[in-house]
Figure 1 (cartoon, rainbow, N blue to C red):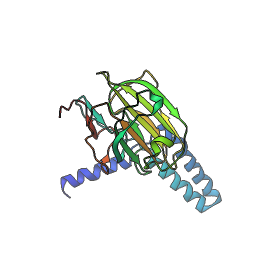
Figure 2: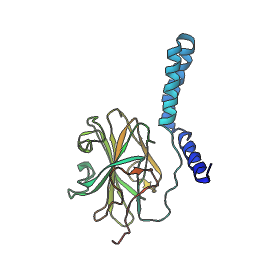
Figure 3: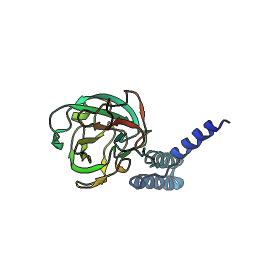
Figure 4: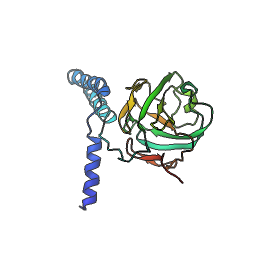
Length: 231
């Protein structure tokens, strides 16, 4: 087997076998409890518990990521694929004005890692949670209608960036581990969305997106914009 294939296989194994985030342990434990009960009561109940526990182990996996070292890069806040690259007004609850800015929307299927990571370093200036619907997160109107948690970041150069966690068709819980006033570091974990979702990034004014619709993202590693680019 060629060395590149061995490295690719090893990387895939590390991704699948990554330890789960602590938020997933109650669900994993529930699956194991069902399996234990099924061992005495019913074979189908046993296998249901095993499948549930294995799925939750996979869904809540939390692999380590290595962000690029150079400053000024905007990183993907989540794994998944880009469904939108357009201009849109940031959520009104963030008070970032009503001028459209470049928005990059990343859709996360149930097979993607669901840990959210800071796209840039800065200070959390506002966190606003809004109740809403649970439409398919890949739809454009999900940004407006769906339940969401919006976060505004103030960059060291004074510019603002917004990242929005959006619930999906079967997502029912958005977790944000940060608070207003916290210092964010690019690539660090800041949240989690359970079971299918979307994460939007609203770039600072004048910034150009470096990604295209359909492109696959690796949270905390893939570069979606360069704040220091001069072209």
